[in-house]
Length: 125
Image (cartoon, rainbow, N blue to C red; front, side):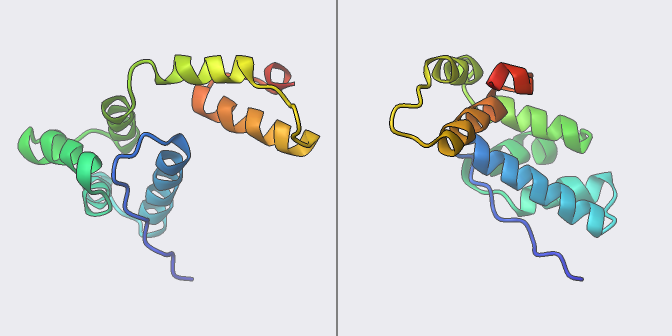
């Protein structure tokens, strides 16, 4: 079974795009049995624009070799504004069902919760 290569992440401030790219990189590196350095190289290969600039600064120019999880955290902090999570929390707190079906409203709350982190199912309900 051949795993499709990850999409290229440009550094968009969009949590769903970032999370999708992270999952694809993790799957790609695990399936390909890549070592830590090869995994970092995959991050560079499958990034462009702002995301590649971070890779270039941290890995190429500074010669850092962070663990993959630490690289993702650093990239997140580089791309997303410091106020991103609190802004998403505000959206979560103000989210109303209005004309949405229960299923769509729950999906919206779950999507927002995923961008905030640390929320339990009972927080969402």
